[in-house]
Structures are given as C-alpha cells and as structure tokens.
Amino acid sequence: MTDASGLRRKIWIAFILQAAAISFAAVLGVYGASAVLKHLLIQRALTEEAAHFWKRSEADPAAAVPDTFNMTGFLRVDGEPDDALPPPLRGLPEGYHSLPRSEGGSLVLVERRGDRVLYLLFKQEQVDALAFWFGVVPLALVLIVVYIIAWTTYRASKRAVSPVIWLASQVQRWDPKHPEVSALKPENLPVDVEGETLVLASSLHDFGVRIEELVQRERNFTRDASHELRTPLAVIRMATEMMQADAVCSPRQQKSLNRIHGAVRDMETLIEAFLILARDGDTGLPPEALRASAVVEEELEKARPLVANKPVALELVVESDFRLVAPRRVVSVLISNLLRNACYYTDAGAVRVHVAFGEIRVEDTGIGMSPEQLERVFEPFWRADTQRAGGQGIGLSIVQRLSRRFGWPVHLASEAGKGTVATVRFPQAEPPSDEDLD
Image (tube, rainbow, N blue to C red; front, side, top):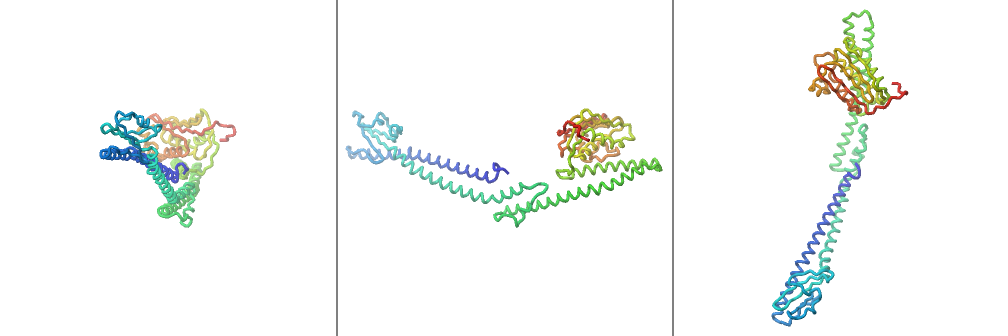
C-alpha cells in the first residue's frame, strides 16, 4: 500500500476538502451578508433618515439636515447653484447610488420634495468597518473553530484507523508461500488493536495458520508422492521389460505385456504432470539450458512404441533450432502429451514435429476434430472419440495448464478427417549456442 492510496492519506484529503468547503461556504456567506448590509440595511437606514428629515422639515422649515459621525446631509433648492454640493453629488438623479472609491465610495440617497432635493451620504469607511466587525471577524473566528475541530477530528480518526493501517502493512509483507502470522497472535498485537480490528486480526491469524498447514500438506504430498508413486511404477516397468525380453512368452502374453508397459508409461507421464501442477507457483524443478530439438527427439523415441503396430511414421523436422532455459521435466511432459495425443488418434500416415525458432509444432494425419469438438478440446476428461482405446482425456488439459503456468501459448487447429496441428510458442527462446549440451 503506497502513501498515495493509503487510508491515512485518504482521510487527510477528505478533511482538507471538508475544511475547504466549509471555508468557501463561510466566505460566501460573509460576502452575502456584506452585500445585504450594504445594499439593504444601509439603504433602509438612509430611507428612514430621509423620511424623518422631511417630517421635521414640515414642522420646522429651517430644520438642519442630518450631520452625524456616520452620515452627512445636504439640501439644495431648485434655482440655487449646486456649488455647495461636493462634486460627486452634482448631477445625481433621484434614487440610491454607490459612489466609486475614487470619489469617496460613499452610499448616497437622493430624494426630492417639491423644489427641494435632499442628499444623504453614508461614509464608506463606516461601511467597511461594519463589514469588518460584523463579517470578517466572525468569519475568522468561525474558520479558526472549524480548523481546530477538523484537525482534532482528523487526529482522532487517524488514531482510530491506525490499527487497520498496521494490520494492512503486516498482511502486505506476507509471502504467499510462507505467510508470517506470528505478528497477529493475540499476545503480539499492539494495545490499540481492539473491536472490529481485533476480530479481523484474529481471523487473519487463523486463516494464515490454515494456509501454512495446507501449504505444508501440499509439500508433504508432492514430496511423498514423487517417491512412493514413481518407485512401484519403475518396478512394474522394469519387470515387464524383462518379461518381454523372455522368448518363452507366447504372443498373447507378449500382447498383454505390451499393454501393461504402455499403461505404465502413461501413468508415469500423468504422475509427472500432476506433481508439477500440484506445486503452487514454483515447480521445485531447477531450470536448465535445453536445445529444443534434443528434447523433442528424446520424446519421439519414447512415443515410438505407441505406433509400433500402426502404419504411422514419426518424423522430426528441424527448421530452426533454439535454446530454452526451463525445467526439463516440464518441457518433456508438455511435448510428450502432445505427441501421445497425436499418436492415439492417428491410425495411418505420419506424426511430424516441426521445430522452428521459438515454436514447436506437432502435426498429425489423424481423425481430426470438428469446430464444435475443437471448442471442448481442453476440457478435462473430454475425448473426441470415446470408442477409441487409450488416453484418458486429460492430456491436452495438462498441456493448457502447463502453458499458462509458464507463459507458453498453445494453439490447436484441426479439421475432421484430415488431422490436427498443435503449436506451442516459447517467448523466452534464445539462439542456440555451442555450449548447450542438450
């Protein structure tokens, strides 16, 4: 988990956005309040002050115009020169005006009664002072309180999610093959791990222990099976080979021995493939520098007994050899399954293996498959011809699983009655060198 996507950073961003949104709303509110103060309250005060003056003027025509700390008044009678008026007021029509700051910035109300015109000015300095004391100061206080609350809440949230972050860091460091779950034991947990986090940690600890047990069980199985299954098969194979070499055996007995010998070879290949696939991730087999043509030639020799009683030729065509660094058993099992599948379903003609750079292609002149059959060819235990002896229907499934495990794409093309072409590509292929012994 990186800092850019961590839970703590997301919470921090959320609080920053929250504080920014509150600040924007507060500024917007103060700006609106200032506009209301300027354009409504002061305008109303000027209007009421003008009404009060006209009322006083009716009772006393010599009544003085308002002249206070915040407000200044001027009265002009029609026919009199307007020299007594400040220049910004001259020529203003009736109504409410806001003078530019270059001209004082005052708020002005102009009213006429008969032949007299009243000018009332509210000083801009006072407007700014009111806006400051009733807008900016409360805004600053509100924002300070908001920021303090947001920071306090962030710290509390950070402490609340710290156990989750700690737990995530522990799980992130786990090796899937060797999960270290000792840190999640109840006695090793930090004191602040409690509640749902404690339940999660305990569950992960139990889950990790279970995974360790399953991994160890898998290792024990593959280790024991590798020895216990191969050994009796090797004994059976050697015994059948010795009995086949005995001239006393009748043709019927020889036929049975051949079937036993073929079944043993099939079982050895299957066991080898299953043991490779049973291992999680790593096959446990060391990589070797292999020459593709040498591995194919070896598997061709092993497959010859499969077509010994059929008019089928096994051929190797080396177009361009290549070097591959991979476990020999894996490559052998993959090629062997493709060859065995081709031999089982070819009654006459040839099975040719073409070796080109980065590619091995197995072609046969067998029964082939229809497009519908080709779609199911990689399904386990599915066979194109269920009446045909030999094969268990899992060879191509094993090929596909091995190709996915090691990144060797496999492709099948087939036509019913004409044969099948299986192509395996090796992206890691290298040009062969003289030092390659295989």
